[in-house]
Amino acid sequence: MPTVSTPTRKHPLFVALAAGIISVAVLAALSIGSGDAADGKTPEASGPLAPATAFEFFDGTPATLASYAGKPLVVNFWASWCPSCVAELSAAFRPVQDRLGDDVSFLGMNIQDERDRALALVEESGVRFDLAEDRNGDLYSELGGLGMPFTVLVSTDGEILHTHNGPLTESQLEDLIVEFLLS
Image (cartoon, rainbow, N blue to C red; front, top):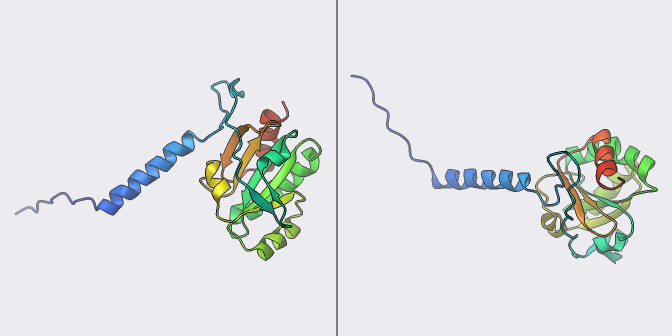
């Protein structure tokens, strides 16, 4: 006699996890300030303003993203425990900052990391940007961070023009800066 299989019930935790993954994917596709238009150019509509969330530079000085008003800003969220962040710092950010650092400000926003490990990584990578901490990830969350590393491009007047979740190559980073901040 053939065996008849009965459908198994989906565990509620599995269903909730799947719904969460789908929600994150949808949010990623609709990420704030993506600036992507059908023709690949920045749309005329302005992006949302950078949040006023305060953070501290590694020396303890308080600041906000508005502290950079008047000059385009690249904010890179990174951590020493993130292998992609470690690779991206020296392979993409150091050379691009060397070329474009006179025209664009760079802010390295360390997130949920030990300061001594973060400083050692900065020394090793050779980046020379301003260093700050987002200890609890508040600014990261407000800007729509979904993965690490996370990069945000901010206009001279504080508009979020583009966000990128995940690592960038040197050419990708430079292309984004030229397209969104220097054109």
